[in-house]
Figure 1 (cartoon, rainbow, N blue to C red):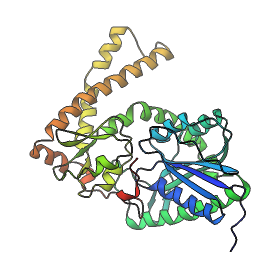
Figure 2: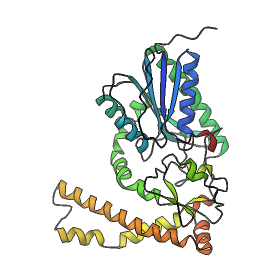
Figure 3: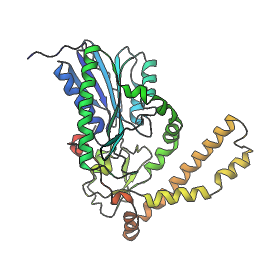
Figure 4: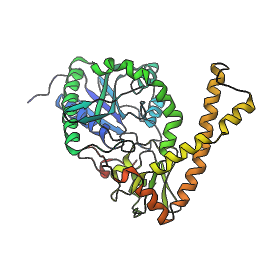
Length: 358
């Protein structure tokens, strides 16, 4: 049986995946490409040191597949795209969003700037945007909500597999394809842009300092070995999350003992305590600033606030890590962490060994 006709001869996929959603999407895209006789090269960008130049073999499509973090492209993928070489390649942007299902109703996620920023950066490099697919895979953000049921995960996954196959057929036959979701959700995506910026410059650091290993940790170090951003190290012989953590949720998903938790009982009181400390107000008054003094002064006040939050988190997380050495204290945080009772999430068929160690 001869291969189906396609305008493209080769497909190069650069992907980053925390719990396997983007990995599954990239795999499905590759499967459909092979049906069309398109050669496929897949590149994981985990822990990348240098940017791999795409292999051009005839008319080539370059796909960037990545999760949406805080209504934005995953920071690691943004860094990769910024360093990507200039060229006139055809490009597809595929971002996985947090989809949900309650009963028989499916709820989509939001992309925020996850499509716009990669498109902007790549267009400035001379690339041609030929495809856009916001892709609603099962939400993996179990720090914020319980993991989905198996039936919900299966239903969402099957729908998405069908969707990407149909999308890929249009893309390979016509040479371009844009999902209706890119246009329909554009107003909402732009509306959450301020949240996107707040998360990128501040919120993600707070989430990075919400993870800890409970007393059930057996020192297997799988979380350290498989962290895609090399953000987990040992401090006092315990896993310690650095500020380069992107909250991709892989460590929580692959931990065999389910000992990695989100410290809700730590982070919430810390943020409340911070709100009671008049550090920012005192510093702002000292500089003679106020939020009614114009745009630049308001921005400066925000920057001062972010810096103060950062310093406060550094100090309190170090204290928190020290206290965790005491088993009694560790157990208190464990039993008051919601993730101890919530389901975890890894994409269907994806395990720790599915991820490359670069």
